[in-house]
Image (cartoon, rainbow, N blue to C red; front, side, top):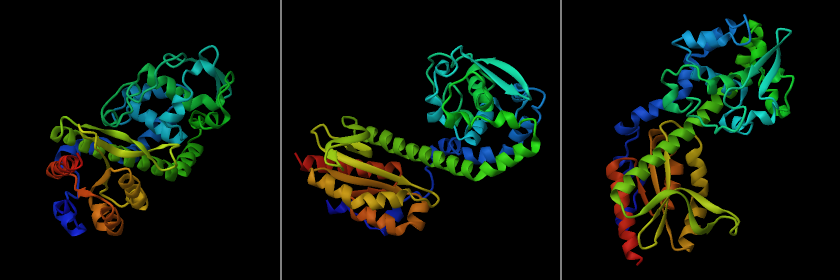
Length: 344
């Protein structure tokens, strides 16, 4: 059993520090912040050139290679601070626009837009809006789904016939700035910091999910008869049974032995590993008391080079610690298999 306990120095000799080769294309696909920053000026130019009418933007995104319709919508969402979760709460839109259409004011005139897809119950997904990470780096033309949400975000604040919640409605104001270049530039500038923070958070979460899926897929190859998924361990709770404790990965042997697995891979520094370190002892005590084990997959230059204190805390309360690579996940599988056999 002691062979599975390592020091930080031993872990560093096994670490990849940067993303494994087989994940690099997927990592590039979720790196959306650089793309948004690169295309920010083009996004602004589309809005500035749309002063001929409230839907002039459609012609521009349909003919532009640099500002595709789905990327234009992503810019609108982050600048409006209306993410997927906020928007999904507004669907179907006929709850707020009784006739399924939006009557709105633009340039002191009243206009009319009938929602094509989201007026009535229609599943709201990132995929239909071409907003998934892999889709955003590809070319996607304007669709009725994209147009509905773009028009809502642009002109919802000027709607006359709606019952939109006040908080959401006041965010949908970008369209009112399309005929005023200075106000538009000022708005984008003032929201720049918030947008950058929001997208970095989305990217961090997406990369964390990518690392977890990589571990799960490789463990399933090594342990085909085990149950391996994200979730909970029955009976393990951090608040006297009110809520089961969530773990990045839970592995269950055919004999019923449970193992919690936490994953932290970070190329640059951030606070995720500090949060995990703060929970480490309590989680280990909780699991050991219930007869279970906890393991950590720790890797990334940011973690091992800039957060050594946090890494050492995690390793102290870890029953087995490995790096993020196929050989290391095979080593973890050996530990899971060995330990489950010992507890029969």
